[in-house]
Image 1 (cartoon, one colour):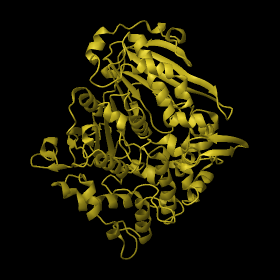
Image 2: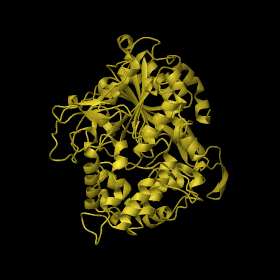
Image 3: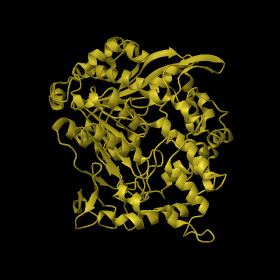
Image 4: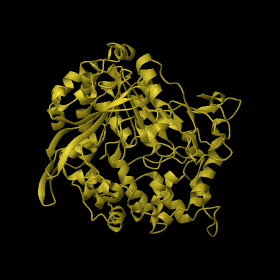
Length: 577
């Protein structure tokens, strides 16, 4: 158990007594009827009496902007001075609706954390909630900064890797990776019990990107403590995925030293168009989506786009084909050992979000930011390798780190641990980045605690995600199925989203309600056989010839939505096969 976890073991025992299994105890409706909220002002450090927890404020918030009246709690756990001399704490907020539905949602956030995002149910990725946040549905919601302050002035030196300055402190690394969730979950449940006079009947955890990673790590470490998990576009093997940033940079520098110039928007539009020409019809209809992503990789060949002569908008240079082929094979060391997974070709590769992550341009207002070419550098250097490397922080230094990353000498640092001298001080790192950032069974998933508790997890992943390869999630699901004798679908399901980029956007039906799906599965035993997706209202990358009312079924992997006849804009014209 981590040091943070030990400090709050007593709190954990209080909160976990109601978490034996999904079938045990009263229903959420029964709990909601019995709940009798106390005055919000009565929630104080003293009245809660939780060890190492301080409540900074408790105030009622009125109903507004579609959200219910609630009690807003702001607090912190485990205030301390780090080994680096900096102050640390697990800052959090909870929103407790006066009209409670008997459920708890642990909202796990993205990026490097370092910010207490409003606890309404992942406001940055509402497309996975069908546009209706958890708080508006009556959930009590917890959000945190996972133990470090991303607004620390030191982080100005880390550009788009903001929040990496905490990486020298071992406990801050653990909190960011997993220990913060282990600590805060029981605290959230204890606050709920104090406020309503009732423990939550059901508990869930949900997030996308790094939040998806949090959910997958927790599903392994704490699978018995939450009835359901939602992991969107998860970077569950994030240290390895971070190596891809360096691999991409070095691949695209083969075309142009300025990687932003390696592939123009028209180049990527050509690749996406040709991928659709080869693969769109594999599901039985040409509709601008690659539904059968696995079959597509066998029939689409990037080399076919190589210019016979001079470069034009209708072909790619030999250098471009070689560079993108190399990038999509994933990073390798000199022995040929795979350091991360490969990547699929899909119809959403021309999108702005894909360009932002892969060639570091494309999403205003950041496309003119000189730091854009350093995406991921600070995190890879400081957080995901040991000992942490703190660069000067300017764009040239960060880019140089990626450009000179050694896949033989530097890549193994994601597994390194021991005592290292950092900023002139010896610091012991008992856990490697791989250990504190990933599920303990990342390479051989079994989800034993979750499965034995009768709990559930839903993953979803955009096929054109430019940050974390969809293949990583598909491979993980395939391994879990093999380890479960083919029975993984009884407790874990992955839904591929054709055309979707990282967590949202792209030429895709990128709006779906995973929260309702996990509730129905965890509480009613209704495993999701298909989840209906629509087009997000503010998705500006949908082709003009699509109906804005288009619907599609998302299917549990490895099933594919295949056309069976009827209106090609309607989900009922497709079956998951």
